Length: 588
Image (cartoon, rainbow, N blue to C red; front, side, top):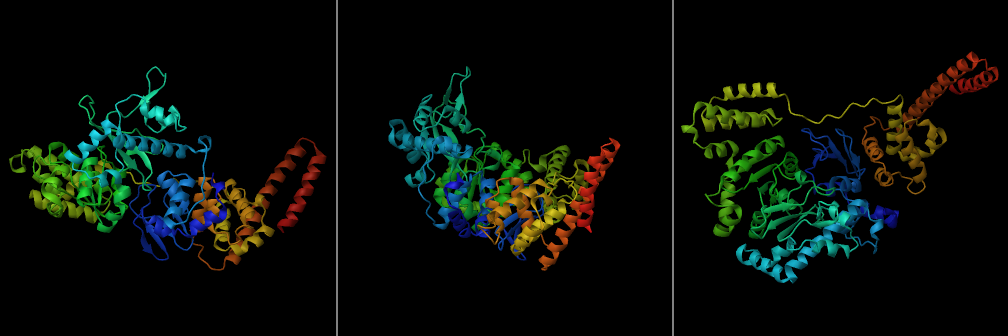
């Protein structure tokens, strides 16, 4: 589909989309020398190995090997198709794309899922605003929940009618099949396999969006007591991984970055109430259990998190369950203790923004929060109960890889619970020794075939100095590159050199379909060659590669000669001897 747009337009959009500026919207990049670095968004790590080159307009992770340009980042990070990434960057740069209508058959897997969710969102919105039952829900939102039309429209809330197949019927009229809706999590297959029925019925609908504002899933709040589940979310799909999504982050991301902290709530209505009141650096876990991936997601944008949960027992338990993930993500985190029988929604309506900000300013550290919420109180607890609490806090401290952070955390535990710090540190040592260090991503060691590293360095030299391409064309053939991935890249370079003589690495990545090869190009382009004399390096490397290849051919011919002589095939052996003689002359 990308062939619809010209190379010139694709290149124009890329040139208008500085990779550092774009990636800074998702990652906390820090300047290190000529490049920018951060924790890799594609694997779990504690030490930054993700590098972004502003001069080459590419990124590469030296931990997991992922790499590419601004297009590939959006495609892999957000599950966008190339067209979706192109549209996002074009819109961001203010570049108008030509009109393009495509048939359902031509849509990619992701395009079709996005389209299905878009159709469903429009359907739910229409039923909220234009039907009798929907207007009753609208009245409930305005009068009982205090939401304005601006908020309802901004977050595109909707209403799923009380019908078994109304969405399904509507979507079929939009060139979508039952299978399409099933893949998007919008319908459920009947037990007798005779068809499908709508997943969401009689529910207030909250679209869940990715960072570009594309709908990828839904949350539905029950409007009838007949529905046992108060909240129902879409199942996981190719677009939606609930453990890696935070509701509202597409809207709040810049505010979180600006405030350098994220306020976490549990539900959609809490999020909307606080947002409407003026708290914008906020995210919601969509009513699902908070995960390590979600903690890492927050850590990309801010160094701190503030938990603002319900004041009941369930809210206290939920806050405590977040602690290991927040500690593992190396986030500073505190917990707001609301008055009894209050939740964020009710509190902001009753007391207003100023009082809510006071609560946030006075948020408790985790050790103080644990101390305040113990039942029975710590002073009245048995020795065994006290030991369990302290062991749990010690275990939580172990989730951090920073010895300084662990000590600061335990120091506060010692002060709050009036216990010797040395005792806690001894217990921490035992805990770590017993459990072992937590799993940290380590790339697998790859055994490389002979000559592959040399071939890789030739590729790196050519990307560093494209002026050597003509020389390479005269001295090295495609067959000299025995590694299939590098050979394919080299062939692609030769095919593209007339279109882009400067051999921009990001241009090469755009015209490379294979993900492994894209990562290889980004690693080669980020390789420090250790010298500016790239021509001398190329001469040395290409000469060495040819010698290696000749020696490999020599060994092969010697084996063939032995085999031919053993079989008594003198004519064949004579032919091989002639080839070997020419090869040795070439080697000399």
